[in-house]
Image (tube, rainbow, N blue to C red):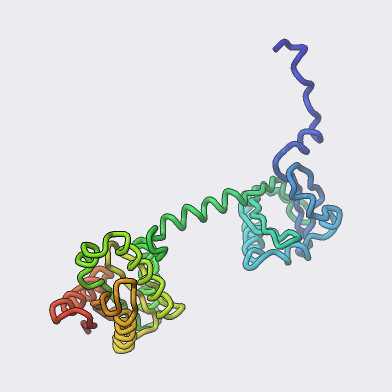
Length: 298
């Protein structure tokens, strides 16, 4: 391409309209009044925004942000204004038709005699957020049953154990294992075995409480976390679960799928590995006494 064929450079204003985002100037007075004196850019976001109204008053529009996004954004603005740090955050923007966009904000503050002014860029990052959510789900979910996996379970157990220690509240766990699962696989095939695992996951979730978590550890082994639940109550819940599974027809005949369950209660401050080992020992005790039963370790 010759020099004469190179397109003429765009002006600054023309260039901004081609940017796949919104270039903005945001102002907040010392009294808390907020406005966007300048908003221009490409993409479809501006089509749903009354930028003329926002140029005079942005307080009401920002208060309409979804869920916890408003206090989160206000906290980010306050931190940026107080320490003159870059403003970097994300929030959800509700559009007509109930469509939700995720908007990423990056801006640089500067003090003014009456407040703080930011110069920055807003970008629609909805596709990126959806991909992050998809990858996070893959990372935390057992692909066969759709239950949380061991990684997700340990995060939850760590958090609940911390709360239990801090507030002195009970916390119990169940270790569940399908009896003679290899025999079932050998007789009915691995596809039927996989179907049993999926049905068991669905049925167990429906029988536990909303605040409980059931996860697949691997193979035919599962673990349930029961917050605010002492050992005796956990034992009762486990036995009801065992009876319900034993009476369910998983496609291989009623009574052909049973569970051995070990339960244990968290001791304040003990390592989680010790708690899990105690539940595991209780599970093996259930296996030793004949399976299809619940054993506990105090």
